[in-house]
Each structure stands twice: as C-alpha cells, then as structure tokens.
Length: 382
Ligand SMILES: [Zn+2]
Image (tube, rainbow, N blue to C red; front, side, top):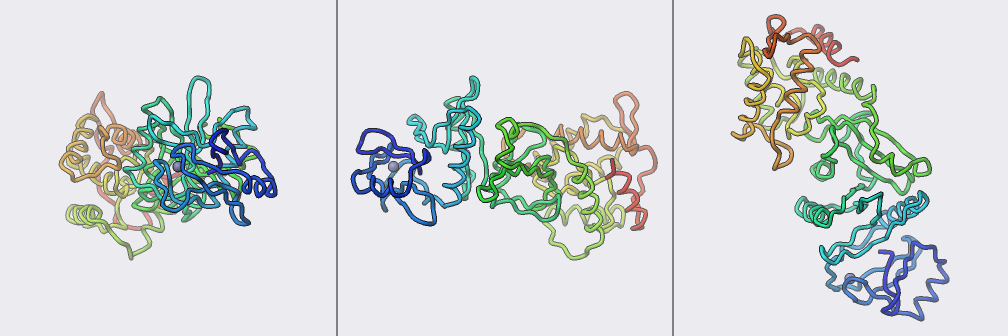
C-alpha cells in the first residue's frame, strides 16, 4: 500500500511523488503505522517495486491482503494519477471502518461515490460477494478493474474466461463486459458483448484504450458490437464443424445423444439454429448449443407455440436442474429466450401470426456439410 501514518499523526501518501533519497532519509528518522490496525509498517524502497508500505510478518490487520505485486502497485498508482488529471479528487486506500474495507481508490462522481478495486490477485466468489455487498451497504458503487495480465486471448474475437472473470462481469450492463487495466502497456482493455460459445471460450469485442486517451466516461460508455465479432463467430462455427476431437461436458453429451436419436446427426452437424450469438446467452453456464438445443427441440415438437410457453419450458428445465444458470439468484431465462426466438423470426426460420410462432418450413436438419456452411453464412452475416 501507498499510504500510512507517519509518527502516529499525519497520513503520508507515497503516490504523491517522493524521491528515493527522500524516502530513505524519512525511513531513518520516522516510524510508520497502518491507519487501520496501528501496527508498525516497513517502508520498502527497492529497485523492483514502487516504494510501498508493508505489514511486518505475522501482523493481524483486518484489511491485510497478500503482499502486493509490483504490477498491482504500479497500476493503482497510474489509475490514481489518471483520475487526478481528470479533475477528480480520488482518495487512495481509504479505510472504511464500518465495513472494515479498504478499497484501492474512492472517488466522488456527481452525487455518487465509486470504489475502484484494481484486482490482480485471485479472489474467490465469497470474498468478492462480501466486498461488493460491503460497498453497496454504504451506498458506494464498486468498480472492479482486473489486471490486464489476466486477459487470455484465443483468437481475434475469442477469449478464455474462467469463473474468476465471470464474477466481475458487469451484470447491470447487457450484454455484460469486463474491464482490465495493464500498467505495463498503460492501457485499458475492455471486453464487451460477451457471448459464450462453450466453457472457457467466449466471443467478445475488444477495445484497447491507451490511458493517455481515455476518460472516465469511456469506461462506462457503450460501443456497438464490432463486425469482427460476428465474423469470428462464423469462423469459429466452421472450425467446430471441421474438428473431431473435443471434450464434452455431461450436458453436451446428453444434447448430442438427443439430437442423434431424433435426427441422426452428430454434433458437428448440429443445425445453425443452435449456434445463435444472442446477447443474453451468458446467463446459461453451458455451451451455446446445449441451451439452444433444448429450445430447438421444443420448437420441433410444437406446430405452433407462444413465446411465453417457450420461456416457461426453459424455466422449467432450470428449476429441474437440467439447465444451469451462471449465477445463482437469477430469475428467468425470458430475455435469452425472447432474443433467440426473435433472431429466428428475423432470419425467416419462424413465422408469426398474432401471438403464435410456427416454423416457416419443414424442420429437417441438413446432413450435408456444404449446405450447413451456407446456412451458417445466412445466420452469421450482417
Ligand atoms: Zn494494518
């Protein structure tokens, strides 16, 4: 951390620009204490990490975390300076006694208070929940920015996102996005329009935003889904159809068995209609073809149906634990189902008369690869 009490009185903040020699001199003459637990701190002035304070070994501080990495210190400081340059008056590492938390930065934004957490280390779901709830209890909005070294890029528009990443996805936004900051590259990396294809493989539009050009507003602003993302999605489906070796989850195997039983189709020949990139698809913790496979089978079983019955059907599968949602405490699959049905309606697969939907033609899945790829083209092009 950068701030400490000097001689039990004032707060000294190392992010305010001290020279190394000054700090070495200070260290000889003064003692430093943690503003939270009042334990004595070491002032570390070395060649690798930025100068910072650290608890002595064995200190029991309520907000003591693991030793801060150089990456974290550097990022925190850059963000602090960046906010200052935009006319904010951020407070570095303030201790919020009521909730016993110490966010990296706290700033006022109009009538709102925002706690910025630059998260580089692992954080389990329970700790994340506790910290988020703490801020919300005080009416503070948390803004989680992940370490840029946690971006795992697979292709131009596909990323490997783990449970760690997903817990930070900004759920108030739709579709959700993730904010990263890299102090090495001095840039924000924003992953938007997250659409999972399967576990650990998620499509996204990446926005690289150098710190020097970025404003606070850019972090919350909306960008349209990039055309690259749809193109990448199509390429991905193509290579999925061409490859044979793959690891399948239990639910994916079950879906493969259902399709084989009904249509005599193996997984690579699944119809284009179960690979639709819809914005709310992320609510399901399954490959896209699993949850859409259920909907597709639902459609083929009914001559006509109401949107509401498709929603009920999916909610029923969730309730019976045949489909899992990504986050507990979620309500209904309604948004994802509506988007799915609308997509099929727009592309001419479904027709609609009053509140009833029905298939535009016979639902006969296509067993020839060439025709399938052509159909993908129809679905996954602007
Ligand atoms: Zn302490």
